[in-house]
Length: 494
Image (tube, rainbow, N blue to C red; front, side, top):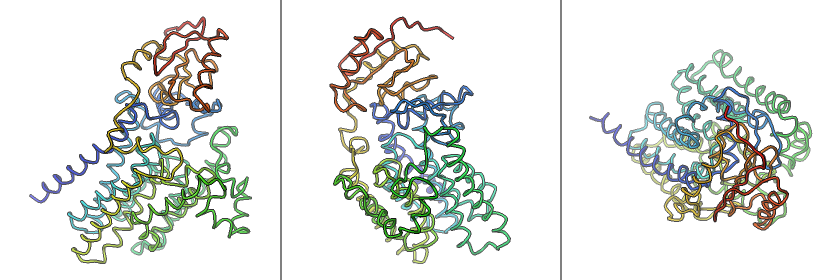
């Protein structure tokens, strides 16, 4: 009977949060609030890999064409490729939700089976996990493989502590495949295991933890600074370019860390740019981290070690979008916070555990709602994430109107499209981010979003320029869209 009750309550919690997560992520995609970066880029990669082709990232705003692995060394996308035949452009969003749910189940099983925490408290911990702000900011921003890696961490810890090392290694490999920088995070996670796992002998650690730590560091350096650099020829992701405030090269960054410690320390909390719009972005992250239970991470060296590379990559970045709480740049903190809470409450009796977890959960829920309603992040739009607000379910775009335009475009024709159209149309060999035209046969533009132009006048001027030079003809236009076709283009069925 107890087993049935456990499954029943677990099912209810998972069902409720599946609904909430879907209302955020799936709704955004349906209402054209997903974009070329990053869902369009990943969907394009799915198409290439499912046809056993090398993918080239063609949706860059500057028009550069880069080998996919030179921009994102995310091999795990290859494993997801077959599923796009089932779920189309929603594939990666569905997979992302599934992995978040799996991450929660991993937390539940770790608390209950490894830490021997009572079922009622384990349920609250599961709700707590699903309520941390980092999940909602990630779901509101397309798809990213960082989310997959973060949601695998509870399982990695679970299998490690239960001494199921084959499964532990499987999860380690899957995390490694998610993205090049995850290998650096894995190295610090394993260092924590090495130091604080007391029931394993030095000989055992020399056979497992130490080799994996060395491998993780080597993997990070080789992939990030040699393999990706070779593949992208300076056009894709260059790790050192993300940290120009520290230095222009790896050697300069290392030197400045030791010679300018005061300046480096200041970067953890302050923007090096005097732009007043940047004020408070970093402090907002620290606030959300602490009130969501992160203070328990800071007092536990086991988990403090795990967040060192995460804090460094956030706060030393030259991009303000990484500093704060928006997008997918906080997701890795979510499982670490809950794991630290689980360790902390172990020392208390059942009723104290119940009280502490309930209070932590309530504070986190309130903080998350507050962050959704009001954030310091630049270009933040609460409509993308406030699933409890009626505005979240409204759009100027009529789906039937869009379908009429899509039906005019041959299946594998080369396109140049607006950012919010790219994720739906990425399943073809070539697709560009408008206004990059190149060899595109069709130009499909959403007129109410002028990005990357500075104004709608600039957007309209560009469209008219294509028509006036007689390179393209307008074949369809509505309030929202305009579709142009290259003159003398003929589609050949393959």
